[in-house]
Length: 592
Ligand code: GDP
Image 1 (cartoon, rainbow, N blue to C red):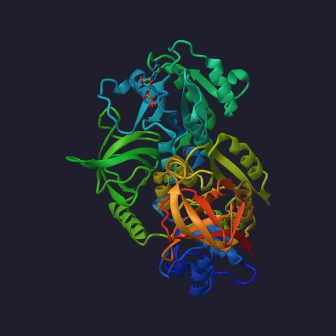
Image 2: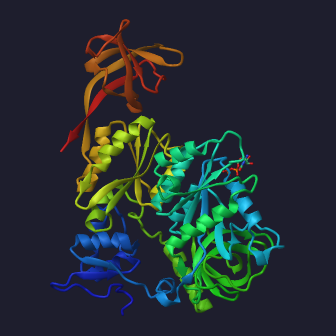
Image 3: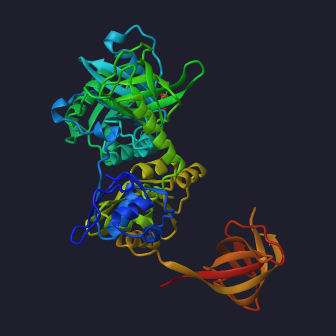
């Protein structure tokens, strides 16, 4: 097959099917589709992607363009190491240990529980070693192993998922019996659910006096987790991390839940998996803890990790012992890489050093070329394109509001929306600011964040900008619902035009309340209305834009003031008026 043509077939009449690889240049896509590069660039632009002819785009982007051009698109299996290892023979699959993440509200005992589990159930043959923190550990109960990731919390879990690493099989939700279900408990539940990971509840701190387990079970039921004894299917185990009570019960329950998942992997192939932790050791160089997902890792294996590579020099387990092999679900710390990878990177063993090096170099090149991945994080405006390309069946939304009371009505209006087979799914809702956790969840679940009367934290805003996650902020429910509906139906966002209603000049500035200042105005044109939007203009520059808080004539609140009259004005969030400032009031009107 010619290198310059990544597709298997060019379309001819009546046959408009095309297979596209994971990444390709714009030029290659054009050749594959049999159309001009200019046409492809035009189509990309219409989908909000600016890319040059030699720029690399990913499959998702190419698929949208190809399906817009009337092609039936399929992803082509790449003849590369990472893909080959996924094609496993059913017969070679063997049961493997579950991988568990511990989540829950702060101070409910996640860390203490991870310690208690580790101390009581170290894998028997390894007892005597010195406990090392490598990012994960294994315990054994009834001769069966369980792997725990020891960075607790749903943020860490979702951050890994956002990087494409889906390693957790079971989530243990720690709920302190004396505190009950708290905001981060609810977040953790939503994060686990969005990932489709089953939850085992550890009702912790039962050693405390006056704990009411039924009360917590009631709260859990309200959050959608009905415990088994009440007829639901959530396994709930009372424990005390402090007294090391109930730990064996908890481990048994994890094994039972894992049993239902029929977790299997092929141990007899070259290893691949995920980096859990990585860093540079002053004396030993780059180190990484990897979790083997399939195959068996051995010292001497050539390995590609993210966009670095190496040859495994030595491997250590979580009690600091050198190990000769690591099978599925086993965490090991490895030495021998050329550079430290990142947590969430995938690794794969290759046949030769040369192949490992070549793959790493190709990945570095792709990174330098900044592969355009505009549709990986979803933009509300892209939703229709994805629906059309058959890539979206659900529009995942994360809803944050200022007060709890706003959630239900908005949820109800949104969940009623459907378009063809596509439905809105609110994967998480809550009150308060939009957090980094929300942004990660959006990224991991290809969702869009909707804020109602709330704003992102500085960290969340930065992360969203860096990762291209769409955050939409609204003050009016109608606008919010309409925007989502329009996105689903492929309509463009309405355009608004500003209509100036009046102008006034600041003549005086005086105190209004404790901190605020009011402006004494002379209305020079049109009229000022109480519910208009407002701009403060100084020397031709807009220095502030918001809404009117108060409009008065003499001591009375008024609805409007016409040209030629004086009035007093307070503007939302602005006090730095200066005599001579121009106040312009306007309204927004939909056009088209
Ligand atoms: P995390 O923030 O969820 O990781 O919580 P920690 O593990 O740091 O625990 C928070 C506090 O609760 C610490 O002071 C622990 O000692 C205490 N704690 C944890 N588990 C128990 C328990 O089972 N019983 C009691 N009485 N205290 C506990």
